[in-house]
Picture 1 (spheres, rainbow over the protein chains, first blue to last red):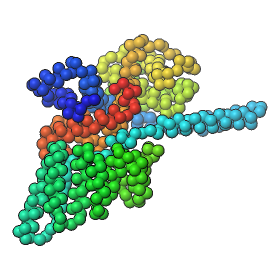
Picture 2 (cartoon, rainbow over the protein chains, first blue to last red; picture 1 turned 180 degrees about the vertical axis):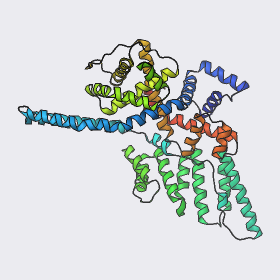
Picture 3 (cartoon, rainbow over the protein chains, first blue to last red; picture 1 turned 90 degrees about the vertical axis):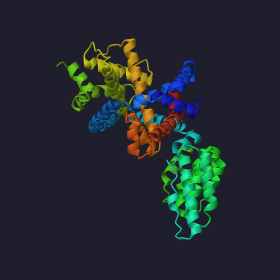
Picture 4 (cartoon, rainbow over the protein chains, first blue to last red; picture 1 turned 45 degrees about the vertical axis):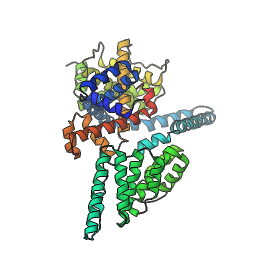
Length: 278
Length: 187
């Protein structure tokens, strides 16, 4: 399996920013590692195909022509159906023939439904997690400090909180998640007197960082601890997605709750995932 | 200008009028052929699109020579495409003249279909990424520099833009590999 770090190197290699000793070492690996060569080919092919703007434009033109002429295709169907029915009615023993044709169509429909269902079940919970989980680019939070008390002590604490949020944010953006977590924990200790809305934001962000560190149970605990209204829907959603990775039955329960909560921003998506799981 | 040249130039230049003319001239016969061989109108549309795309790619690479009329060639390409899609050996051949294709020609058509299928897979997975990732990658794929990506996305630096692109691309590759089509297309 190709590591994430090696995938970064592949991309640097392809965009020409891998240089010197690093480039040499990578090329040596390429010469002897078939899996790596295949991975490079996949990355390259993606760049090539998704960058073919002329092909994309051409496909668009074909699509427009097909769409504009679609009524032409549809207008012939009713005539064909009518002709078929007329033919059937004109023949001797047409009723028996009609029934046997109808039975045949029903059987084909049944087989088709079974095949369709078989092909569409078994979407893995893992792939549903990957497809639906997303992370913010940064941790917004320091601006949420709302204390209006101007005392020296509080000003000092406010400043300490701002620094801790900035540290958490920079560490998060640089993928240094242990450092980000340490800064968040510091905020948690400092932030005992502020509004609960800060607490919800803090715990939600903590959950995200814990996910980045692959600490699933701890992440779930953080999301479950979110009590303030504004962050609850997001926390519920993330919790449900994480459960896809560790306990699919619990995930289904969590998704079911979201799918049955009107006004929940992820109500529709939760229903879609449940359908794909079943 | 011969009909061959008219159609081939029209395809190469992505001329909407010519593509429409090709549709009007040839699609009914293609649809008839596909429907008589276990397909539906939608399948005929796919075949029509894939045939045109394979010709477009070949013209782009200056890798196309037609020995017969465009009519005959185009219909032969469509027939071969439908054959590959259904893997049937025994067809109910229509009255339209069909000439066999060389192995090389056949191989080139197969390549064109595979590219088309890969493109469909990649774009479907790209659409599953977060909006920011989609935007970053679309900018990258259209050859936007990292400096411009940083400016467009309001990132602090070019280096950060590069890193975001790397992360998003890794995510895209992960989604592609998790799809069953990845193995089928021998990616």
